[in-house]
Length: 521
Image (cartoon, rainbow, N blue to C red; front, side):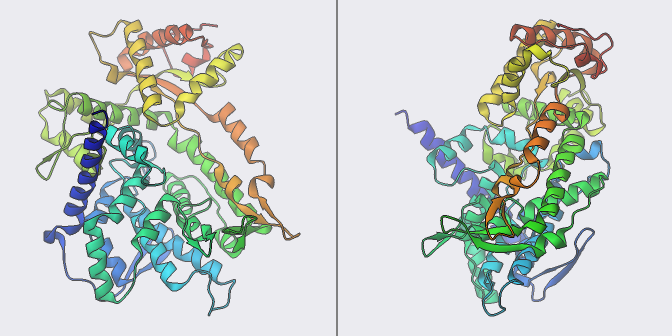
């Protein structure tokens, strides 16, 4: 009897994937004739992007056109107005970078014996096209929410697929769905080509294919690797549109790429030692993006307000809900997030009457009336003698259902300590502990030295030093709340954290612009 709920969850999960794919891929209302000619698209970053007719046939599907309705950088555009680019633009950029990386590697090998065979190139383009189709509203800020849903957790527990980011799991499953498989079969017949769905879906998850007992990591690494096409596009694109000056010597990076055999015999992408400098530039740019753009306090405040609305939709679906194509979304189900886009989210604000509290919640985001900081949590604001307690709190910055619940419990305690239960709800108090940027790229990138050996890129520049400096001097957590309750929440947060052994300097309130900052040191 104990396994029945899990069985029901899994059945509902797979049904949800199928229903989404049926509507956004197989619906005959959205199917036109297969294009006969290639298409040229002009991208402001990468210039001319050429798409083959079969790629255009897929790109024209609602599955990919909906990506125009999802901002690449969540709510960053409210702070950096130029960041209005979408997942659609990013997808095109990833396809272009996939092509450039493959061409650069193949240039090192004879034309009649390329490292990336023609069929492999086509399948990698397929993976690049589908790699982000599983994203939901405002991209990554919904992942923490649907990644914690019971049906997604139940699916991961089966071990059916390699563990990956929630949106990658969705993307891989959508590509494997029956409606997509049927369409791919039609495309193969129409254009006389062969596509390998299983390979492409595994590459999205970072799972390599094997040949003669060797793992072909170099294929996977084009899509999901230490310096893959995805990272190269989003770092450059996000920096460009946020206005951050970034100088990435991609031509030099590509020129140094080759395939080598690792010690265990697997084949991996490697860089020449001369190509490490561009990688260093890329990682340094990534650090700046996190510190300046993604972790900007106003961006984080806006994202917490968004999460508050979704939390309300999960706990009180009768009052707070979203409807798409006569479908009432249940945001306790991970697969229902696939139907939610930025347009769907904000359109609900137009549908609601002014006296509806949900109307105000949506309009506060729409018109930039954000939460404010009540407390800044950092290495500089926590008392030095409480470093161990600070590091314990920092562990709650990891994604997952348990850490999410722990942060919400802290918020409830602060709300109670402030004596505001009759004025606001727990959805108005948020403990924000941003995740650290991943620096694993340098540990997973192998470099060809002049001596003919392979070394980790992290051995050649001070990556771990950068990581330590980021955590000590750039990382900031916050307690957010409505402006009118800033002082009370500030004092209540100090009280609650002190009960857990954390003491704060006055700077924790000063940097948050609290009218009368206090100290517990």
